[in-house]
Length: 181
Image (cartoon, rainbow, N blue to C red; front, top):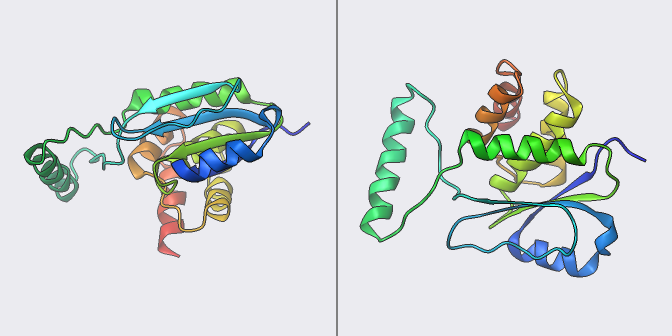
């Protein structure tokens, strides 16, 4: 038995097809992230974490350009009748707790969001960092980028995870370094 499930990082449509093609006994768990205008997949009896937030930037404190981008997007969304909800530290804490419950479980951890490029890769990265612990940050980032080519894990979620896991900026740094390459 492995020490951790293998992450599958997918968008909504891909996740629905994945679930149809894999025996439910092979799914260790599901992290389904979707905004209010998006959907989560049904995955049978597997343990499940449903989180409802949108793929919107979280501005780090004191980062004025990021704060301005967040405010401009919020104004645009409101003008168009949309309410977008960013991820919170509580959402990331829920991912960490869920990962702890799956430690040692065989099978696949399905992480999905709308497109499978930002929120789901961040959730999978948070799970790997939780399971593997301090010192594994660079390897965890590399694995996520290998599993999902073109992924851009949600930076705000990774900042929250770094703080909650006590990684002293190492997970944020590993992701930033990977983005430069």
